[in-house]
Length: 55
Length: 560
Image 1: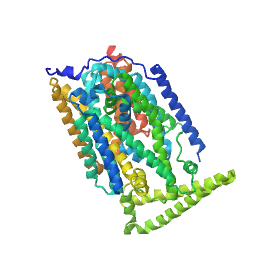
Image 2: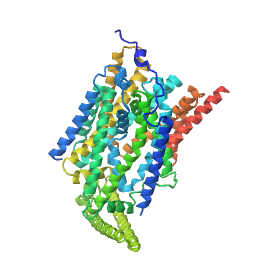
Image 3: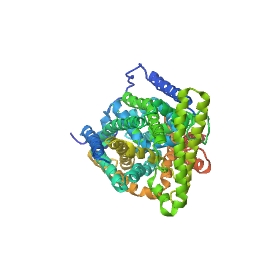
Image 4: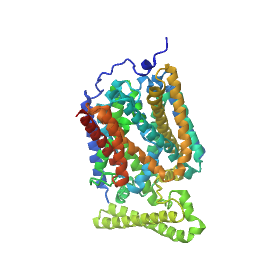
């Protein structure tokens, strides 16, 4: 096969990038809420931990 | 270092590198070399992202910081999960669909070649300056604690990282990062278990946590908003989010990780995993530092963990001042140890009055010990040593090398070496990619066969690798400037983030506004740093807002 033209070699992989759903929870929006919920949970736990052992 | 340590260290590193090379075989085109042919699964990208972000200094310095200042540094990472969500919703699909090799390539599609060149140059300057320090910082600690020559350690770490990066490209980098992250996790878990097991038999884990908390070492969340305070909930959530957005959205060393994904979904999952795992991981690392602090309540720590400077104040000419200081330090250590025992007994008795008295006695003893350490820092300065010495980077490795059993020392050193090589390989790989795609191909040779660009990419990798090793030999001479160079990252990220915010969210803004917006943003960031006392985390927020405001304003004025 002849060498590719540089622009073809560099630019396009000929793929399309559809919006695949996540493997869990059905939608990405729900996944994002889980991450934000997890962060909120961690902050609350760390706060309670810090207060419990505060001098 | 005993034989078992050498075996564990060399065995771990050899396995990581060989595994990476095996997984990265067949990278024989530019697409495969720089983007792994877009075949990477989310779990490999996720751990590669985390390994790239976690340099050796993260492990050495974070634990030391917790020992000295408590766990409040964890708040620095609170904005990261928010940034991961924003990037998954915006940057990831945009970069994937734009079919780009670098984040800056997209800027030419959206604005013009001038803006792409400006931001690429900013990245090369900022990452290039940080490169030598990434390699040098752990080497200097290993030199002081183990006597290994800096030149040898930087050369070994740099040469190995550059070798596998040059041979296998981004795929090898990602898979070796994956294994390095496994080694890092194993090493840290082992270090925590050892720190707890090494406590005296009468001190339980709950006692240890109570003692760390009573000394203010478990201060993980501070609600008070203080603009000059580096770490509180608000600077972490807002400033930390902007910093993470800049780092993961605009820094090619991170963008290139998730551009290798099989699909948008795989790239998103890798970032979301980082958003979920990063904060607990940092909490865990800081908690190790807190347990090391408790360990040193019962085992007398050196007055200064930086041995070279300690030796300086111990020399005969300084003895008249050092001896009384040492006596005060010994007395302060013994009184803190006794106070800690009394506090434990008071807590177990359940008597609140006794507990309060014990707490006050313990905190007073801790303050005496801290004061003595401050006096020793002043004495170092008086003896002609470092000004305002900070020895936090030496604390964790002092604990490791002096107190951990054979084999475990080698494992923790493998963590340090692995973390350094993970960061260096990703940085060199990204610098080579930007040099080839955004500079060489865009401005010097637009039309050439694929194998030509592959060879240029390899040559650029070797160039940046040599640059890293050579600059690492000299950054030590910069002294306190090492910290200043680290700060340069926060000087540039705000401007870079601003131009991507304009690109993604302000459809009407044109190239002229984006270009001058970046210049204005950088000018304001430098002015803010040098003319005010605002904590550096806010520089990213300020820079980003100035770029956006200037970009919008210039575009509007241009229309009128």
